[in-house]
Length: 423
Image (cartoon, rainbow, N blue to C red; front, side, top):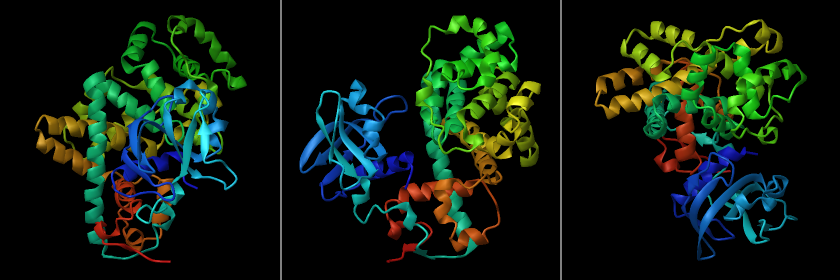
């Protein structure tokens, strides 16, 4: 069963098409604005249901029962929801849920999507259009650059209102929160913005443990484990911050995660990074490194060193796997998904096309990271097995292909020339 976030593109894709979900005759018009904080997943959506137009919020779940399991029926924030989309719905479950005003909201399963919107589980069952690895790599490079452009626009949009450093910081925390705690990490980036952290760094010059206590305090997780009791002594130094709203421990997702994916482990890495980063401005520091346009190996080594951790005795005792978690793969993800997109958009915005071309080549040359779980269905493609380049851009290209072609069953337009097999 797909995770909840993988269902968001299906809703967006439905609204970009004229496809109608049967038997409810649902036609999406506008998906709404994605909500990265508490509340419904999409706000201000518009759609037709049985020929009638509705406007309001949309909530998406894996299971129909999650509406009540998450207490949305008691939360006034969900009173504007007019559509509940799910993947799994038992025949015994009602086709409606209720809000805090006891108003009925239709529940529709995305499994009823028409043939133009197939489950990603069918992706491997495609015939090979052109199995030449050279052709495949050329197309994948183009798709990866399209995804880079999308990321660049998102980063630049944040920077226009919040500044370059905060844009990088928000993207970094969203990366650390992926896949299950993205919204929570982004909220922390708003509660404790980068500029504020630098002010504390200058005035207090606190140890790394102070930063961990700070992040755990605002995450609502400082009471999560017995080992954090000794960190509470730092709370007295944080009294100037307690007037802000911290998160609740209940909003974090821990279940079914490896230790590396635990939000506590990721907050520990964030604390070490903030403590150790050598410059007040992430953007200026990284821009100055990239502007040198040094050969790939040298620049990659310098960037990796800048984002490396040097754990103290406390970290080695309490988070022995921290350096393995914050290893080459994560640092590559930070460079590719956090730094390069913003630099790329600013270079294009300022007509520095030569620098943009350099960033593209650097992006395409980055080493591969771990294959994303949602891309496991591509592992059977012969072209990918024959391609031994081991580059980061492959994952990005396949994500773009999955979201814009495979999930929409647009086989005739597939840039790799693949046609889905019939069963």
